[in-house]
Length: 243
Image (spheres, helix red, strand yellow):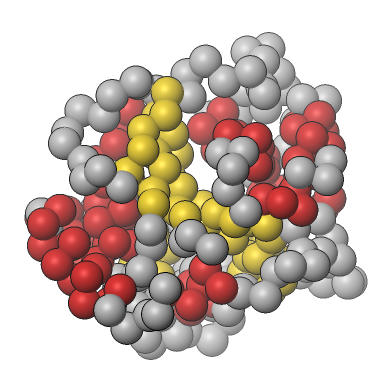
């Protein structure tokens, strides 16, 4: 099964999308990456295993929908429709553009989610009274299972009612009982790590002002890294895994 990753974003965060993807390529055996953007072509040259999709004409969320004027754009919401956007894929790892992989995170692609709609790290302060509420900054979707009608249910719900955290709220609520609690090492942030992980695989700068996190040494490292350098590291990691 191919290891597929996805990033979505508006024009103002294209550089962050590219930085996040470089870090993932350099630290995992990912096979293919999809960029969902507002343009048919990305403004910089990308390696051939990255496919760019123009999402500006998406039809899942109409302009007058209840969540279209929230702080999150349709680029966040369309992630819940990923099973329709990449119809031939069985699984996809969908990441925020403020995530940075820092060491080998390949095992995240193989989490045991055959009976689950998705895997995501729980937010400890919101998960109570039997509710498993998850942070959707890093989500491994079981696209095959989402096609059983669950994705359509989530889309319909977002088109009928306003939610503060859009697809994260709806996905957490409607997929209850079929969510795999992803180890927080794959989504290390203030809301998921009750006890700090000193050596996480993926750091998520959730809630931090952009001007602050883009100046972090780890982020600067991958922002300045070339694709050739990232691919060279990727080839070393890929050699560890039998395909």
